[in-house]
Amino acid sequence: MSEFGFNEPTDVPFSFRVTHRDQDSSARCGVMTTGHGEVETPVFMPVGTAGSVKAMTSESVWQSGARMILANTYHLYLRPGYELIQNMGGLHRFQSWDGAILTDSAGFQVFSLAALNEVTDSGVTFRSHLDGSQHFFSPELSMEVQLALGADIVMAFDQCVPYNVTVEEVAASVDRTSCWAQRCRDVFGGRSYRDGYERVLFGIMQGGVSHSERHRSATALVDLDLPGYAIGGLSVGEPIAAMREMSELAAGLLPEVKPRYLMGVGFPDDIVVSVQHGIDMFDCVLPTRMGRTGTLLTRDGRLVIKNSSFARDETSIAGDCRCPVCQRYSRAYLRHLFQCREILAYILATTHNLFFYQELMAEMRAAISSGQLKAYAGEFLHRWRSGEQARLAAQDRPEP
Image (cartoon, rainbow, N blue to C red; front, side, top):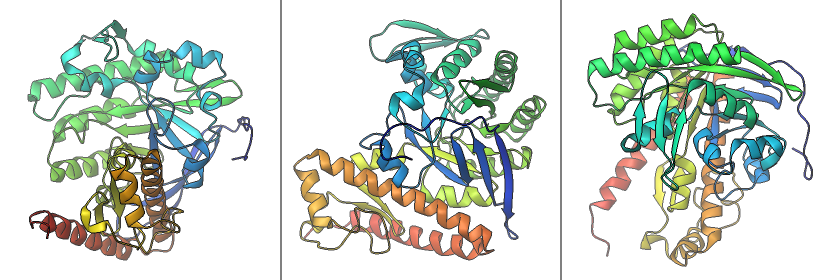
């Protein structure tokens, strides 16, 4: 990324190639080529809900190692409006981001506003969380909005249902999602070349925690022969064991030659496990949201910097972290910033968390490439779980 200005995209077609495979699991390394540069996988995409990764500049996100970010179709549709962004040259130029962008379909946001929406086979009628105004989203409109935003990867419109619904409701969501994916492909064509670079359409698998419905959803999507596929409908209230079981099953149902994207996951240990299941792409608001609330992520679990025990702690967040925050600032100073509600607190904490995630992904790619993933994953998961257990035990003890 240039220090100043904006780099134009290239006309290189989208592609994905696997470069290394792990011998002890389904993990693999790959390279995803987009009109806005190459993205090494497994990859974690920071979430830029409203065209901004919260508390971060585009330069800072790039410096963390991120080469692809996620933007939210629903929020950008409502504000500032997709026509405005299109007229400003697209989302890359609007937010001055040189890397790749993936836009979600708005399906999950509509799901999260269940009390404000009505779902039919035609689409979803919902009320804005901003002003209560009524809107209608269809597969066709989702494609129109995402193409106007200028994303490199566009997600098919889907229906996400919560964990505690009936088998019949899960089956209905699979039918509707499959139908909507076909409608998205009919409009989009799978690949679309505009503004000097190619955009591609990914389908989203649904099916809850049902083996048969996951199989049915995968079959319908794979028949569309899309450039990539996502696993949706997880991290919506189901137990962690069920999420991991379903993500492993789902990954095995998707083509090996296409990128596999587990949506909305998540915690570092979930990512390490899911990479071993053959997942290539991840996104989650967790590192930015936790950063803003004073929870810092380390290899030894979560560190809640607001705790009084850090008031005089001169050490860095994590001694083995190479991020610029750990190289310069103490835990005591960070706690002070949060106590004073200084804006710098949110910036530094988010910076650390995003660097942590990018370092984790880079280390896993290196471990896969060198045939050391089993050892790396075992050590990481042991440290993380031990640290989390110690944190929970400390919560049960009264402070001195």
